[in-house]
Image 1: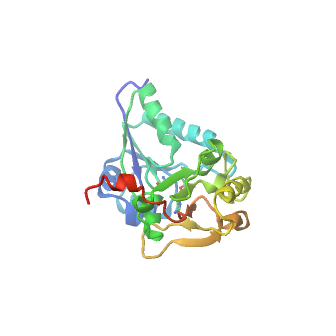
Image 2 (image 1 turned 90 degrees about the horizontal axis):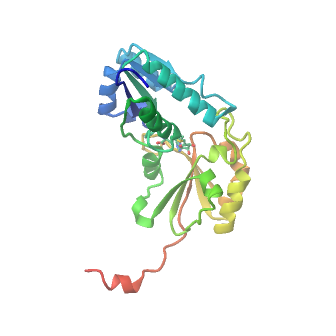
Image 3 (image 1 turned 90 degrees about the vertical axis):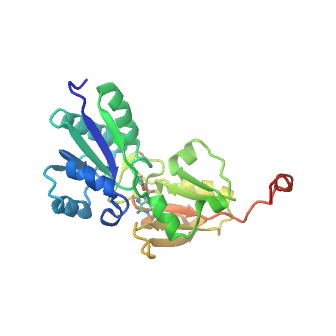
Length: 261
Ligand SMILES: C[S@@+](CC[C@H](N)C(=O)[O-])C[C@H]1O[C@@H](n2cnc3c(N)ncnc32)[C@H](O)[C@@H]1O
């Protein structure tokens, strides 16, 4: 247990930090004693422009070939050890920090067991940015956002009348963080198999690397669901899979008759 109540603030950098960082996050950065972050040239430039004194990269703990749980545990330990020197530590996470970042759950638990305050602040996520790229309102068709490994492990039943955004296609069936080459150990064939059981083989989907700045700046590769494995080379830690819905289900007339029109 830490002797004095300390504070960890988790802020998002958005997808493209120089365009997406919020005014709230800038204020937190300016007041911070110590920042930990994953390298991004845009962030480093911002730190220098803001004359931030202490910023420490976490890249040495999150490297190619590491086991993801080990890397997260090591990052958690570093943040805890920094709390014995600093009263407040700011952790900057790409995108929205509460979206697909299991380290935040670990920090929540540690904040209780070690007795520090944890604040998490919102930011632009890759999902926010992708719905701009694909020009889809997620409420129009119903939308599922899902992690590729959970989709397989929990045998989720897919509903093709909904749009799907599948995350972590860079590491299907592996706990390794192969950030330099996401085709290493990636058992993408498991995901492709599941998709071809649900969709026609030639159903179009898109591998998307969103930019966070709109203006058609995303890199989008349109492929058939049955050719996912053939396109493994286009998959990285900064891509997700978008599968548009097939048609629309019929309107439930009994329910419609109860609506005020
Ligand atoms: C650990 S999660 C972090 C998500 C992040 N917190 C967010 O809000 O976007 C990493 C996953 O986010 C997705 N992702 C990250 N950057 C992306 C981008 N630029 N375009 C599309 N998907 C991206 C990929 O599915 C990747 O495997």
